[in-house]
Amino acid sequence: MNSVENGILVRQRINSLRKELFRKSIHLCSGFVPFMLSIAYWPVIFMLVFAVIGYTICEVLRMHGKNIPVISKITEIAARKRDENHFVLGPVTLVLGILIAALCLPLPCATVGIYALSFGDGLASLVGKMCGRIHIPLTQGKTVAGSLACFTAVFLSTGLYCHNWITAAILGFCASFIEVLPLKNFDNLIIPISIGSIYFFFFYTML
Image (cartoon, rainbow, N blue to C red; front, side, top):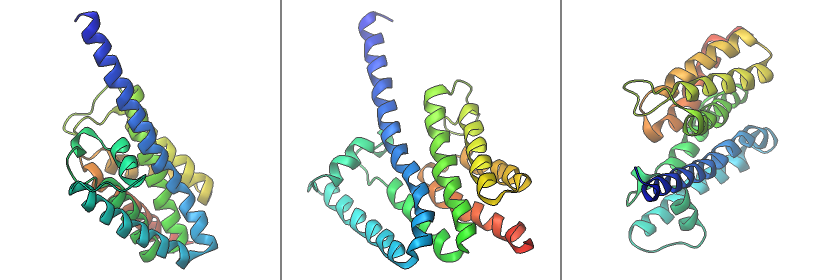
């Protein structure tokens, strides 16, 4: 490989990492939602619904060549290569996962699920991109480093929230198992609902 090709690969890797950092900064910000829900539950719910509807309209318009200032640019910056020339589904599944968890589960359970999505899934992808060297077979590129980051993030966020470290470890294993599945954007939908439900059915009902 000559120096020109090597330089192109380096630039591509840097650009990919920048996109991932931008995407996951949005992902990590969802960790503030439980706090906002605890202060003003229904206003926040309505804001999330409005966000999904507004984003969907903007994406449909973008797909028809009508860019919306700011929103379309953010989508373009954050889009993965697989999303090029397609509807970028990630933000929709992210907000829907949070919404369904918040509407269907007690707030403490929804909080645990949202934290798993925000910190566990968010850091798994970021760490996997930056540090992942050992890939897990049949997972479409998921890495051991990413899975360990997911477990650690869910273990710490759950443990600090519920003060039960056995519960935190079990949920960490569950979240890392779900995250490693090749679900693409749909892990945003599945993780908060499933982890919040596991916390509810196996632990919250026992309190």
